[in-house]
Length: 147
Image (cartoon, rainbow, N blue to C red; front, side, top):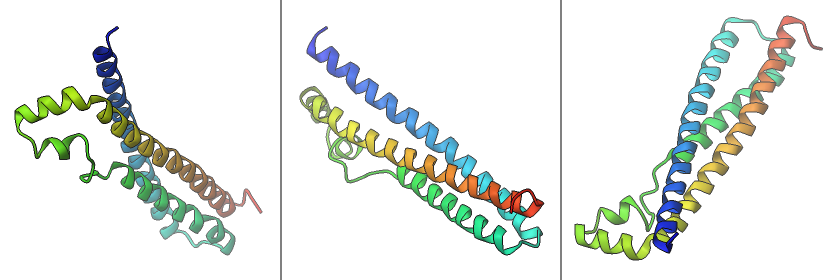
């Protein structure tokens, strides 16, 4: 396989990984939003005990933090040196020359972007799991199943 084909394949792989991460981020953001809305609706209508507050409030805070991380992960980076922001300033001929000569740098830049997105997604999943566990604990407390 030639070097140009290898670079093209690597470029496509990195772009596909960014797409997969963005899809997962969108799904998790919708899930977190639904859990937050449901928990808020239930908590608003019930007389909560102090132990339920002690478990539920941190759970809600962690879910809001997870939503913030997910939003941060999907926030466009317009300061990047590669990709859309660069191409928007170039002519068609300059884009062709830049892609032909700078594909390796674009792969490196996109790879760093993919790792940053994946890291935010991973942290958001951890926050969501912890926040969900605290909300489950609060629900158990309210139903008399714990403490």
